[in-house]
Image (cartoon, rainbow, N blue to C red):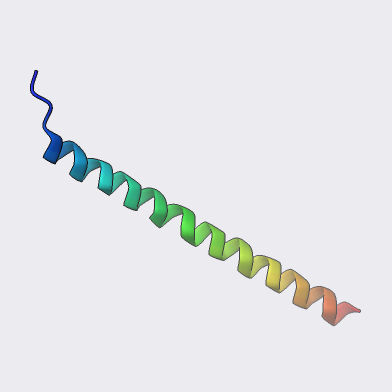
Length: 45
């Protein structure tokens, strides 16, 4: 069976982009959540 390098490399790049597209916003959201929690703690004290 012939292994189509072009198709698999395009597919692999797509999967990597999708993983990055999911992971980066989660990190940003966690960072924003930590900032909001810190602001709330400072306001209560």
